[in-house]
Length: 276
Image (cartoon, rainbow, N blue to C red; front, side):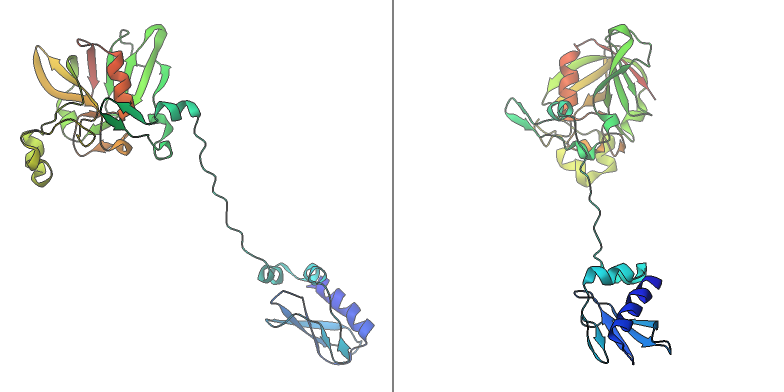
């Protein structure tokens, strides 16, 4: 600590101290014990934690905290400083998306707003270049990548993030069409779901009325093929923060604001292609 030595040496010469003395900074827990050499200079410093004053064998000299700190090494300085906590910046959400995923009043029910800080932006609804090559108006479900595309004119598509069921979504692939649409649909678990999780789904074996706690959410699109129900659904969810993952059950889940939007854009008979 050469800076400290220089400061103390000057103080020793001014005070003509002949014996060991101590130097401290006001409001600082670090104290230096100084031992003079034969040439009346301070060469050794021992740091302890005591009060804040300069003490010499022939009197007392007080120095400011700023002057003392200028002479300390980084180690001594750290003992007198306060650790600052890092400032965590909240993500800034574009108001456009805040409105898109805000609270909705839908008939007798309320669709809660999404906390978009919990959803990766890639799962938000957005217009993108069409990667499918399908005709405009077609729905394409890309289950491996957790996307649903509504093909638009001009080589564009509206992309939605989806959650995919671990079992039900794997049993269908290829072409289908929307055979039926429903708002706040009634839900009945499949026999496979009841067998797999009887405690969870057994009580609803006779069905569950539509509403905010219904697993299908506010809208459902029922996929048919050759006039028959495939039991494959595109619907909302009661677990919106599972979007982008393979969830325990269900077919293709969208955030509730997104399934309401998609439902309004596509009529019955819309062609659906499922990649699996």
